[in-house]
Length: 559
Image (cartoon, rainbow, N blue to C red):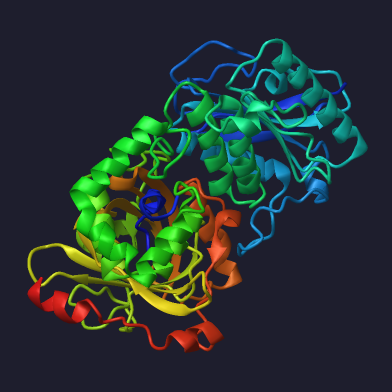
């Protein structure tokens, strides 16, 4: 993406101011694997050979370090994907057609593993008319039905949900949930932990600190995330569930900087007291400023672990007061005791050769500097533009949907480091079009083609690991993968970018090669979001010329 640092928010500050069927199992466990799709009399099965330790069978209840958080089963339609009838709604903003439910579910399984550090085991099963093993559905901690609409599939869904509901009522377990997504108008009454929408306890409404109430709130949040039809938000919903009810912390969503019933009164009070005593002046200045206080009020309405909503809110109200506010509370004092490390999954390899020669650090630097004019390290083929690259499409739902994404990479005036300045347009939550910009320090990684980025974004430091996954010999396109973390807010993120000199997608004949490059980084093309780089659009005209040289005019001189 052209802006990859993380979002933050502090809504807790407001407390101070206001407050009978069978199934064909398709077993998937990432991380690096090859697979063969087989068609037989029972429907699909997916044979996977992993480069890692073999995974347990779907029906296994044995505890292992690989699946200690639990298991997920994704239940998809029984119709052959080749018929093209049951297309999912994933990828509606991508440069390719929406995937079948089978293709989508396979990738969702990978994303669930990435977000859980490989500690959640995921099955994909398709309904069919033959007798078979239902264990994957009945024994899964989380069962998510996707796109079941035919009468036969609906009967499968209803039966399985009834059996699970009966089992839950007889032997309650907190680490259990089930949802039906895009399965007609019937929601089939979700279950999340001890909360059953079909048989709600009075505690769910009257006792907000009870597990039933936790389950009810989480059910509403998960349902909203599932229906957004993106792989990031789908996986996030399941991380929230397992973090709450598995008995283990899930690092991806372990930390929260919100005031919540889930934290408890004592922890909330401790955090508020720490903010007052350590950052009182910053808080007062922010709450007395209309722009800063509006941001805090807007953030109070959301779960800040939802990176999509929280980041758009923050960039809508950027100011020095907001930066100082978060710098004191989050970065300097770490009031919420958050931590986060850069994700290590998936394992992405940088391109090993370029123009027929082994990749070197110098060549990799030249590739990312790209087409920027007046840089000594430009490679042959540089078009000498006012930007290095423009983002044509990106894979992170929170950050890569912003329009008019410009990237500038250039050497530091001192030392061997680089600077990276993303300049991008934001459509704020109140309808304005404004330019946002960041200033990253870039250091080369140990392996040629890898880089380490760091930035102070709205008072919070983000660290990222970038990989040059592929590039055209003529520099007509480049594919980056990135993984990052903002420790002070406990957030982690992943993404990938296709960049071109003008921000337009490459010709159709080149796209399949590019999609294979993305797949090598375990990103499917339907996960990408096409960026609007139209300089004649109403939003671009309203925002005016982008401030491309805002940092470069001084950084290139003083270092």
